[in-house]
Image (tube, one colour):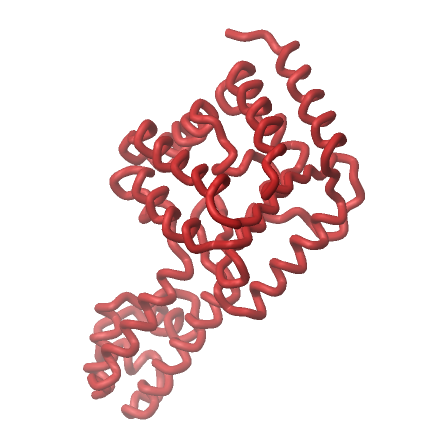
Length: 284
């Protein structure tokens, strides 16, 4: 979980603990008996180890006679939920909805900083490559298959490569050129696409060679939108970073990653080498 989300959850737990003590419940056990909860649940909520649901908040406020705080605490819970969104919840009904949510963010962003250590950034993907990634998402999370619609929505983001005065700083690790989505032909098409888009004036495409000295561990992929938002992806969830001091850390990490990257002709050479690799690979 992001530090910001965890800190918010711990702060909420401390506040609820204060309500409990002020109401005369000297121990979590006494409060658990009054609410008919497990004592462990009270402890986990108060120590920021478990999310409190909106219903939990209502019960807590009634038991401690702090109903006047219910709306404020529920708003806090919803904010924490927004900081850490489980993929399964985001993908309810399919993947298209999550892709649609990205469009307004892209529309208002002026400077993008993108780091992907293992795959090509979505906005630079071909339709075939994107569809292959979505088929994996559908299988992994066992969600409705809306691959075609999700792919179309992802490709909508490409319009911003050509509109306005946006700046795109994109970093990929060399592994992203080889992570095989869809087979050799799909990969060669995707690599050709990278050769084409790297000519765009407002796109800076850097690749970190696999043997390059690094100044910070690669970590998870992340996307920075101006200095206002960072989205970080894991297998289970995506979390949002909005706290300025945390955003500064991601900006620092991106700058350190850039020091290991090559640009221009060396990038083209790495891409051509990857194409040759897939040329030699047998097709089904």
